[in-house]
Length: 310
Image (cartoon, rainbow, N blue to C red; front, side):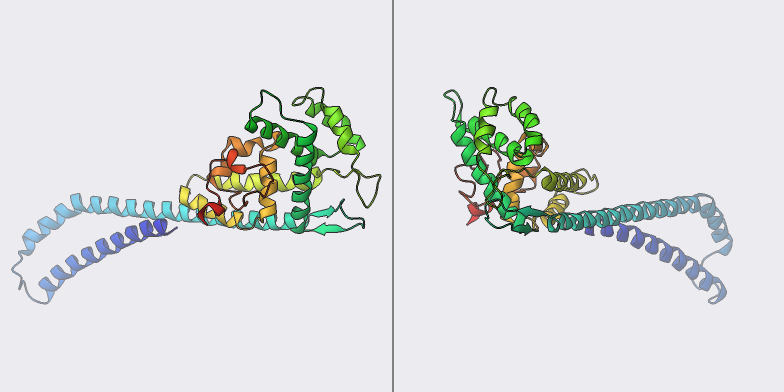
């Protein structure tokens, strides 16, 4: 923004300087001829010839300069308008993000009473549930002999989030089995059967892992498009993009960042990794060590975390 205003001020300053220069020259010769009776010794006949020469040659040049300055001013005004439009839309999208979070509701399956979490506290419950599910998935799917630690964690994180997202409701079980069979053939049905044994404390007929597609689907779509909007705005510098995303990231709680990590590690959130936005904009930089159990986000994302500077 400052760079843009500086360029506009340079154009305006140059325009004013040229105008003052032209007026000053005309005044000098006007006063010389009419008030001081050629005190400066200027031959007005010669001056007339010079005037004709200037009018025919220098005049058009000054006209061209004036046109260029007007064009540059209009161009920068248009860019300033585009910048203002961008900021209006960005802050509106940030407002929608806050509203999406405030509208979240979650029935806590770990409570014997039917307690509904609201707003940001929903992410605390979701983090706890997803973290617990990750541990259970790792118990049911032991590491293969030929698997590296990173490959094993990638697999179990993907399986965990898919179950966490779609849930273990009867009506969606067949579709979930079909999806999981792509990653753990011949183990999906057993995995789901075992996890379904865990029921909500407030209602034994409701599975503990009921799914959060309706809650998080809209949340992640909007978050993705907000970051995409900033990242693909061509007139922003990289520092400016970082600054805008930092304002957005400041709204994320640590628990929210944990859910963003889990989403990014699944096939549902692969675009986060493909675009490298997690690293570029440090979207999960506030996750502390051991916050995700034995899973270390640094294993998957090359970025500096906040705790490393302490």
